[in-house]
Length: 251
Image (tube, helix red, strand yellow):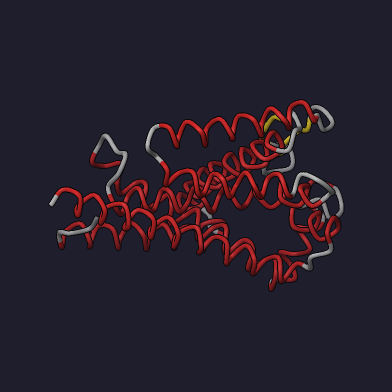
């Protein structure tokens, strides 16, 4: 955690720089715009990985790619849904829960068990397609929370400089994702570009979710913003609890 005054100052500067880059960088020119373009493609990579992971979790074989011609990325579904693959996913997660229990990691069993229950419940019907689409942006937010927590608590790092890089990247990803969604809800020009992306019509994730399950853009946008902030709050709360338990056990 941040204990020294110097660390608090560095964290605040890196966090503010990441937020400013995520909010203002995508519309900038020059070196600032070039830096932001690289960070945006990093977010695109994680975004497509998110789609790919959830495609596989729901029994579809898929691969992520960049889309340099039209911008952004694409996740290509290679096959239709395979219930053999779906049952294999259920079995693998169940085995992981069992191993966690055997190795005295019961705390992991609760969130993983909840995730497995949600996965099973949403596997039937078409709602799982909306989750696959949502979790592109969702994984961006989840990883942003992870990078911020990693830097704030100085966990799972091997080099000193990585701590502050994680804070900057996490703040950028969080600000970029939330700004993107906010502009989609309230900026008519941005929404029009989003509608016509890749030479298609309503090809973006949020429009496809709206067409699949009927959730309008603004409620969906606020749902995402709530999800993104909840990722940060839950992860920070969980780590603080774990550190407190470790300190109490050491006394």
